[in-house]
Length: 249
Ligand code: CAA
Image 1 (spheres, helix red, strand yellow):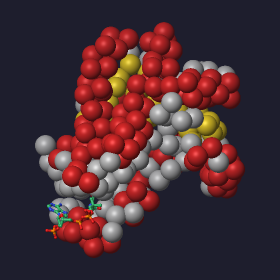
Image 2 (spheres, rainbow, N blue to C red):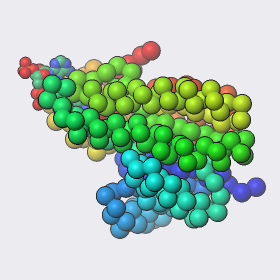
Image 3 (cartoon, rainbow, N blue to C red):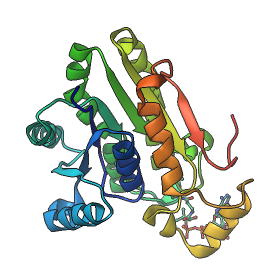
């Protein structure tokens, strides 16, 4: 039987890399989506790094904010793998933090576009292939800050909360066809995105996390691979939290 194909948007990034590796460990053929402002060399260097660690992961360029670019991106995935996408991880995302009273239209729009419109753009391209096969996994990466809100993140919290509404609605539409749709909501994870927060604010946030530390990207990678697993077909429309107890619901 040929291996199932997993595509991870933002796959070369801080969370994306361990997600790709965990999926590869589980036997999927993995393709990492990248944008990097069109800097292909950066993605190829990333690919080489993975290869040195024993991971053979393909890469495909795509701008998740642009519907047409997503169509081209998935065409490239299909061409490279010779199959259609079985597992889509909508992981690409950005922050443009700032207090609402000072927030610009651009800060709002960029975050909504990269974090929420992206769900529609990418999922729309692969969903019919999953329905035709009668098997699929859509895993959307949200955030603890969708669940609890966060000072300075009206844009991000709104977009990330929107993801879970999308998840629950789509999950109902495709459940009978063997396709599951779930949200994974990480807390504060040691990535460049969190490292960009001022150190004093990071310290204050850490003090509010019951487990007493930020999470590791590998911990999220393992959770995503669990949801993608063949045996996880009864989990759908769920929001799986991993946040060190920062928010308990
Ligand atoms: N609650 C209430 N008031 C707060 C507050 C909070 N959490 N944080 C700050 N304030 C108050 C401050 O005390 C200050 O009050 P005064 O003016 O009376 O002194 C006022 O708000 C201004 O605070 P800042 O100095 O922080 O304002 P700023 O404009 O310089 O910075 C900010 C704003 C950039 C949003 C900054 O507060 C910040 O970086 N906050 C952290 C945001 C955050 O957690 N982002 C998560 C990024 S990682 C991620 O998103 C991944 C994920 O999914 C978890």
